[in-house]
View (tube, rainbow, N blue to C red):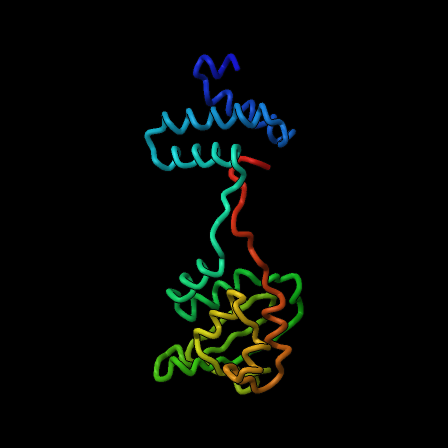
Amino acid sequence: RAAFAAGDYRWVAELVNHLIFADPTHSEARALQADTLEQLGYQSESSTFRNSYLTGAMELRQGPPQLGSSQVRGRGLLIAMTIEQIFDTLAVRLISENVSGLSLKINWHFNDMGGTADERWLLGLSHRTLYSVQGRNDEKAQATLTMARSTLISVIIQETTFIDEIGKGSIVIDGDATALLTIFGNLDAFPNSFNIVEP
């Protein structure tokens, strides 16, 4: 408190940060850290630092920010992405430990992209890596899917499932459906938000 009163906010932030990590429920330390970060935010000339400090102060007082629906945010983002980028995001989410030793290929036909380079895709899994190839299909693929791009987006953001869409007839699958479940059943779900200053 003496350092706070003297205006040595960086030192207070350092000390109280250790206390909060040792006991995140310590309400007096949380309040002092929030006040300290707020003062550091007010003194910052850089908007990046100011926003970081003020976000940290808000988190200590109110908890982490609750973001809107990830489905709404996800849909807007995925609509703006190319098919290649969509498949790349799936590759980032792949839990590689779960697919060790597996090798498979799935052909994709996007019937609403007819006549473009995005009409045909090959999505493959090999050496614990998910990859995609534009404009190509493989005769030896375990499955071939035909669907609209918008249907894939709806499945990715979990508005629907492959099984439901196959039942409706909006997805036609030829081959082994378990290949599809192998890939999509081993995708990690990332949290929508995370703590800035709390453990």
